[in-house]
Length: 424
Image 1 (cartoon, rainbow, N blue to C red):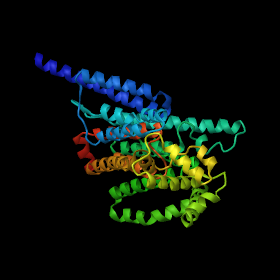
Image 2: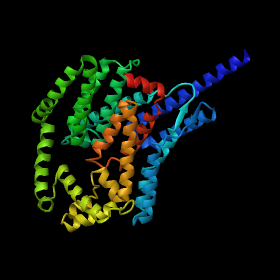
Image 3: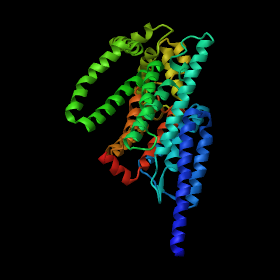
Image 4: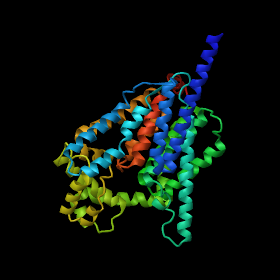
């Protein structure tokens, strides 16, 4: 009888400390989205909670080979410091990218009694996005009331995070909300999920992030196709596939913000492809975001051709600035813009070997997600891979923390949940 009581007590203790880990994960996901200045504090709290659960033997550590690729990428940036001419900038970069080390270690967990309940960190994410979006809308109204201009677009509607990053949060939060509904979690009702999703789509139109809009359309199309296939079969799904180009065409033609971004991008790309060098020389000082992006892609490509093994951690601005000056774009060089492409950014900084590590991360996580039908992980990896074509997504803490944390967390689905996902 005493043995049974001891076992029951141990089980209760395990559950108690594992619940503490869940609460700490939830707190972190909320804070990192809504109050990013306190992210470091929330990471410390999460670390202490996990250490406590480990000391109490409620959890054990179990290395995951895929997440260790982030450690390898950090090591590549560390090696790049030895070739840097700006050690002060390089040291800051290493500080920003510490998430590549922290989360693969912190989230290499094995829960003894209960499995990871991803519901709670998802709730933190959804609430964090809701709070941050509300703050942006209030900020826009205050701006308008004070006589400001363009108060409901770009950074005015997304003052906490760069619009492209915040749009990735919104898309992922919408996906997690529908995932919770499909799993029949308590409180995940269509009464709030549908309006939450609609408001998220509306915010995309105001944020004017073209890559965000494109990825949103891909995700919504994919999710709609999946649910229609499950509910009404192959014929209905095939009809949706046929209708998707029509829906895209209508969106481009009828929604002003999307139409403007699309027409501008087509015009600039056409001119750029005709004569890239002439395109750069003909631009005036007030270039649009799309024009600047094309210019940065060209100079980045030239930089990679000259130094395929990288210029060193923290030296990207100097190399690209010099090339911009040579092309007569001194005002653009002063802005110290990054390549607006993570693949190019990584290659310029730490060379083709760094790029291979980054690609290995994308492929490794994607294969894991596909093997176990982990749809949330597939959406997340797809988000990083797609948006990295248009932004240097891992050059800001907003991107490094978000992607590293969630990608490592979603590896913790236990085998039981993986099998359930396969059947779903």
